Length: 431
Image (cartoon, rainbow, N blue to C red):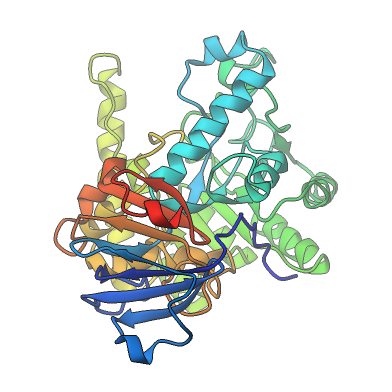
């Protein structure tokens, strides 16, 4: 089965963006004074500015925009988000009507898009109705790939139940999918088939425990290697979908890789042997460094937890640095929802901290993410044949990549050539 491309409304006609410094997402060197041409939302030319005589066709019906002094990049791909985790306190959410939560989630979708993320993979919490609403143009948001729910054993990372069987306030968000609790192989088969029937683009498993779970810890064992292998086989029987694994420990990551997972989420305790296995198999690491390095409030956090977190941060950074040095491919993922929505591109600066060059960090946030979703032919680069998902900024990303963390530095965003953000009116004639 080919990867699903959630389409979005396109801009009709011809649009030429002139004069920007182009960073195309492939890792190639920037192109100053560039030209990017889009026809009906698709890129037909990207490179140095052409003379009028070398352009195909006539100037009739062509909109040209001067972007001198700006940088032009592909729309970014955040491969690990939780867009239904809205900022409203959980107890207040409990008292709301379902439509209030839907509308706040729609605002999170728009915030994410305006941060420069034109495609996102939601790994637990969104139902396909949100993906379909973006596809139809009912709401502005990133194109969506969905896990719908994640899988773990009873009492594992996907289980929100407290010891007495009640649910915490955060687990009763309106419209939240049922937890994917699986203990036996029969449970796994039924749940995976149900998720596929519902419209999942990816299956997320928890091969370890996790932080914030009511009754487990990151070191606990989750879905087994044999069950990961079973899930991969089930998906192959239905045309193929990727499996990604929440894995906080080396044992959990190794089980996922050996079972056939396409990517590892977090990976904060990888051994050199597991890293070598990931390189051999081409397994992608989505390290969610923005969440790993998120600062806790010392005034409200117990001192022992602050110490534990500092140890985990040091170990996690070392794990990811060794993976980068060994050649494990990285893709951008923020765990947004845990990490603040709208600051997705902070992850780019974190990538530089663990050893990527700015160009390689941008590629990890664009082309590599699109490749992980199986959509690299259409998304993640500014190349002919790709869709016109573009970000315009005054920031020079090669000298100040961290500045893109502030969504205000993203001055304009296009999706399939359609202007969805334009703070300076640069693209007013193209709207």
